Image (cartoon, rainbow, N blue to C red):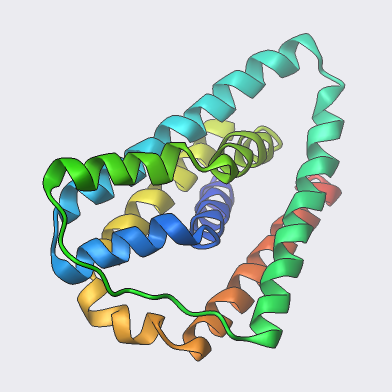
Length: 199
């Protein structure tokens, strides 16, 4: 059970860290201390809704078409390897950084911007609903896997939002992002391999 929970946490954290625009906005809000709790709640709760939609929606689909589980298994593994390869390349080449400068926004402007960055990003549906949902359904306890991924969202966004002032200088450096990309690559490759061998 702990392995499933941690696997969900690891995959959820890796997918969140790989999406830059939303994280940049959360970081900017944290640096300026602008509506941090609302921004973090919107991002984490949106992720929770999308994760649950992926698990419930795919679960019903797989009940009707059980052969799809094989497609999701190998398709999910290939996608994880693809993400891992991109992260490994970024870690090797370097050059990534995060621009954190920005001005404070009004509450409603901040909320609308955050919702747009979250729900209008096509990658969030591919990553959170399709990929994470399919990986969760490969485990013996998909809802526990989903709980781990949801926990990762809350931990990540609140840590980023409230720790922004302390970590912002580090997050601007190329070295920090190379280390982060290397960690993401290791997690992605490990989970992709676990999918293929059926663990």
